[in-house]
Length: 226
Image (cartoon, rainbow, N blue to C red; front, side, top):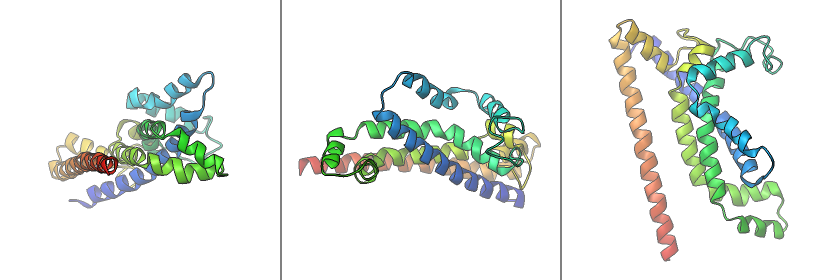
């Protein structure tokens, strides 16, 4: 593997980890708030949150270009040049990974018995303590699945990242872009090892998630029998 391909692999891992952290914190927070809340426009808000899941990546990337540009509404949040840096790749990956995290976390919180939360409040626990001692532990299996899927999605992000971060070797070039441009240039010596790594990683993620889910169901069934 060339130094350029190795740099792309390491950058992809760094981007995916940070993007997963951002998507996880925001996804869990939004899921928790919207699971129990009821207000006019809730369905509309949820549809907006899930838009990156169904929009073409280029549309998501164009929207980020508008928002993150010097004259965009988020220019005050990122006063320096954020576009075409690896930080913009983190933002793009977090945006496309967020819906997966949100959906899994929301389903997990909906499965939590609300009576257990009420019992904790009756015993004097505040909302923060209820969340960390009751809601989060009970919802953790679903949240864990969301974490894995969000990380895999962030690692494979291409379209939106290309639009906001570009393809700068050693700076913003991630594995999907390295593969695409290597194939375009006929450099299969670079593309093939990266493709093999991505295939093995994707297989491992799916295999582990299925194994973990199956074992979790089996353990739950054993506890109920006991």
